[in-house]
Image (cartoon, rainbow over all chains, first blue to last red; front, side):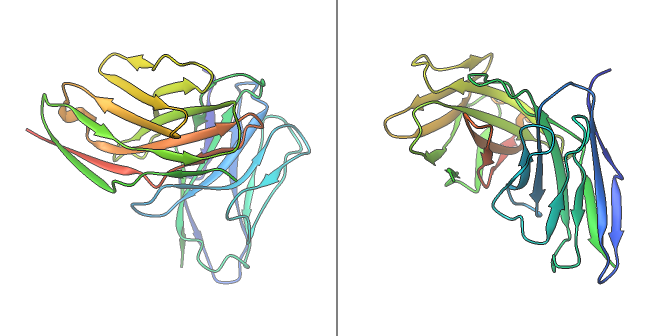
Length: 115
Length: 113
């Protein structure tokens, strides 16, 4: 079945450590996204990518980095510069056609906590 | 960047009644797309309804419909015949032509039996 897979489901980070959240899709989607969700809050855009080797910052990119070396994969690294990383992280993907009203397909999320 | 505002942090409705959730957005674009997503306690994101800005006709999906007012930059969601399973967080979202997609802060809907 086609879909979008995030791993791990739960992740713990020690002080000063970088951690990487995985996001893989087999939907042949060009566009991919990373959102952060704090408890009881909305989704805030961290980064998004429209095509391979290209990505744009969202509202809260500081302390995060991404890469898009393959169409299927869009990993998110939470660096030690992100001082408050505890949150629920959602990855999403979509077609990129201009004029398309295609919805975003979401992964099941990764809960990141600081030890 | 475009902003999406949901002014109702919480709403409550009696089962079988109708409720309307509000959403406004700020943009200088003329062509864009609007969505309502539902997030139950499982935290899975579920598409409820979507609307192209160039369409004047309001979108409808069974018990869910929107009131799209382009000039007012308003996109409200109406849920008719509310069911217990409708209880969730509801997010309004705006997608620009360059695929940038932003969400509002959400409205928590409670359905009373």
